[in-house]
Amino acid sequence: MTQYAFDNLGDSFSRFFSKKGGYPKFKKKGHHDSFTIDASGKPIPVGGKSVKLPTIGWVRTYEGLPHTTCKSITISRTADSWFIALAYEQDRVPTVKQHDIVGVDLGVKELATLSTGVVFPNPKHYKTNLEKLRRLSRNFARKSFGSNNRYKAKIQLAKHHARVANLRKDTIHQITTFLCKNHAKIVVEDLNVSGMLTNHKLAQVIADCGFHELKRQLEYKAKKFGCEIIIASRWFPSSKTCSNCGHIQDMPLKERTYNCGSCGHSMDRDLNAAINLS
Image (tube, rainbow, N blue to C red; front, side, top):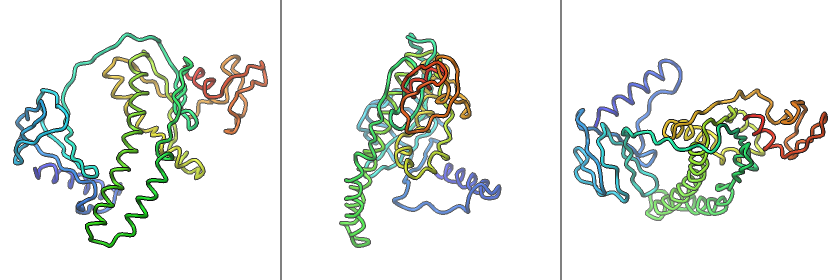
C-alpha cells in the first residue's frame, strides 16, 4: 500500500527540483482523501458487487463491477461516499457513423453547436444551484470549529458540490457519446480556456462549461467507438469567416447572427462557425 505513496513523493520532489511545483506537503485528512493499493504485482480479480482488496478484505459495492482483473485499485472519497477506480483493457466497439465529418463550435450560450444543425444548450448547473451553495456555505462558516455540527454542515456542502459536478459531467457525457457514436471525424477548436477565464464577467459561466473535460472525454471515447478527433488551431477565424463565400469580418460577442458584408449571407454565428470547422 505504501509503494504508490513513495512513488508520488518521488514525483513531487522531481517537480520541486525542476521548479515545476512547490515543496511536497503531507496529505491532510479530509482533503482529497484517496489511496492506491496493489497485490505486490499479482493481478486483482474483480467482478459483481463485492471485491477483495489487499490488506483490507472484502468490500461490498453499490454497483456491479465488470468481471476482469487489474493491477491496482484507487479508493477515493467524495463527501461521505467512497469510490473504487480501476483500469482494465476493453475491446473497441466501433459504431455505424451517420456523418463522415462534423464541426463542433463550443460556446457559453449554447454549449455545443454542430455543423449538422444539432444544438446542445448550456444547462448552467452551477448558476442554477448557486443560491443553495451560498446558503450551505454560510451555514458551514457559522459553525464552531471542531464541533459535530460543523462536520455535518461540511458534508452537506460537499455533497451539493459533488451533485453539481456530477450533473455537469453527465451533460458532457451525453454530448461526447453522441458525437463519437455518430460521426467518423470530429473537428473541435483548441480553446485558450485559461485566457478566457481572465474575462471576469464570463469566468464563472466558462468554468461551468467544462471545456477541458469535454475534450478529455472525446479523446478516449474516439478510441472506443472508432472515430477521429481533429483539433483546429485556436487562431483559425471560424466565427469571423462567412461559411458561404469565405469573407472575413469582425464579429463582436454581442452579435449572435452573422451577416456577411460581401454576399449578404445571414446565419446564426455558432452554426456558421461550426460549418467552417467542418
